[in-house]
Image (cartoon, rainbow, N blue to C red; front, top):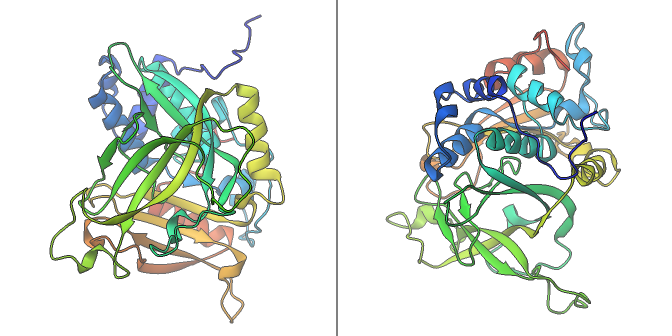
Length: 358
């Protein structure tokens, strides 16, 4: 009997790799390429374009998408995010996605099949990264628990390692980030950038400091230093112009095991305090837009005075936004399985009638 690997070392076979590459609209022949930064970058960006961050599986059991339309209730209906074969089928066959504990380990298995070496690292997310006021950089009480995972990737002759994350959703870096203190990468348009810092977990200095501090790695995303955003500039800013770097996540360079993944995942989608138990989300980058993102989201706090439950769909970012973070192209979808299924099929390419559905 084959022994289950203690650390996450799953790798897709050649048939699965071909199907995965086809799913993210890349030629299956790429599987014959030697590992390189160019290959890594191409596969990473294609995944961001075609595989959404997706929490629908938590709230709607697979069978509920068929039959009469019914209200979508926010809940923890899953109690085990699909991993391995189940996650592969959801991403590749059903053209859906998952949140970090499904998307990142499955993408890691693809990379290993392509000849890359991948370590999965447990991660804390900064809860207020998207709403950071340039005048208020206090980080007290804004670091969450360990509810995220990132990938650290290299290959023979790579020279350095890279941080990748296909599960962060809005604001995530779609370019491989060198695991190097001070490394900075520009985004898909001139108005966005990310940087990596090697440091202890940032915390408010007025707080009681931790007893033991191990330096880890913090990802920062650049935001505008102007209240009106980068659009107020006559031209796109350069990387050294004044700006605010908002914390996004922090991790220690320590590989976690498959059992760790199961434990963290269970908390992330089953505990009463877990964010996604009360949040319905599907989001992906749009190809050819310079990093614009299309997102569908709903939480009960979004219900208007009329009491009608509707998910909001909007576009953010990209070259068109010129650094502004506000939503545009807004529309609404009823939080019922009938109209939501039609919308997910049309807008995100979900496949609900696949033979291998799970």
